[in-house]
Amino acid sequence: MLGLRMLILGALLCGVTVEAVAQSCADAIAVQVLGSGGPEGQNGRASAGYLVWLDGRARMLIDLGGGSFARFGASGARFADLDLIALTHLHADHATDLPALLKRGYFSPRTRALPIAGPTGGGQYPGLEGYLQGLLGPSVGAFRYLAGYLDGSDGLAALERRTLDATSRKPLSVLATDSYQVSAMGVTHGPVPALAYRVDIGDQRIVFSGDLNGDDPAFIDFARDAEVLIMDHAIPEDAGAVAARLHPRPSEIAAIAREAGVEHLVLSHLMRRSEADLDASRARIADEYSGRVSVAADLDCYALHP
Ligand SMILES: [Zn+2]
Image 1 (cartoon, helix red, strand yellow):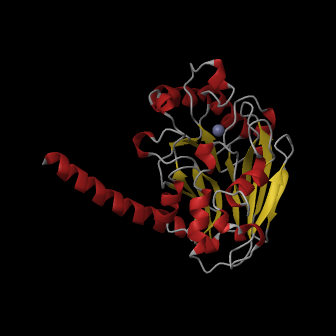
Image 2 (cartoon, helix red, strand yellow):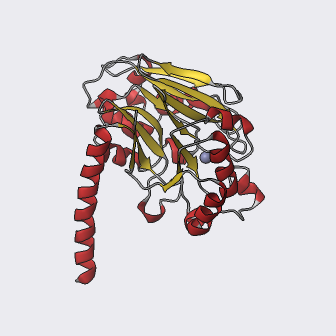
């Protein structure tokens, strides 16, 4: 009985939290976590996904791993408001809920074209166009009944593809409007073509590492003076060489945040192995970086102050 009561209380508290978080995000320039986990779903964490809120609307969606689709609904974001979907890379824990979101869009009044950015392909990875064709291609796509997204037919919003060179270490322009700019750069994530993204709103800067290891000096320039830097904290300090080719160690995260002069570091993409060592990792980071550090949870919202 006690367990049941705790469950109900937890659900009630969770409902209150979701509503409160969505409200605070809608009121500010803000970045919101949809999924704070990696591929494991541990502790109920959805896989990677983030929203950038501006003028009370969710305008940019960065990644959409498993579970982030449901968080998108819980956040109060609307498909019709999105200016951009930006995929960092095509690991499943960053991209699998895209068809779920497009199905939601089927019920949206939106017909305005929707820019979507993602990396070039390489090795086992198809690149943005290959991924979209695999999902939506009119003859072989798994969800070819939604093929109208490829050309704007069937009353669907055309996906305006922006394939970005994942080997570029120079910033690439993704989207520019009167009120903000989005750029990307290629980063090292083992053998996976991968991108980091940067959103500049006036003099406010939000940077998403996606998945990268700690070997990229160019990323420090890319993240320079960010108000918020969201990093993949997927491994502990003593991780082996294979994992460290994919993700940064805590000491490397700290060095990046310190050298880039980041104001607020958010540790996300948590996995069992990084959560198990979180206190030690936070202490290690605090040794080298004196800025604010947060550990992400799904639906957390970080307001920026223009
Ligand atoms: Zn990855």
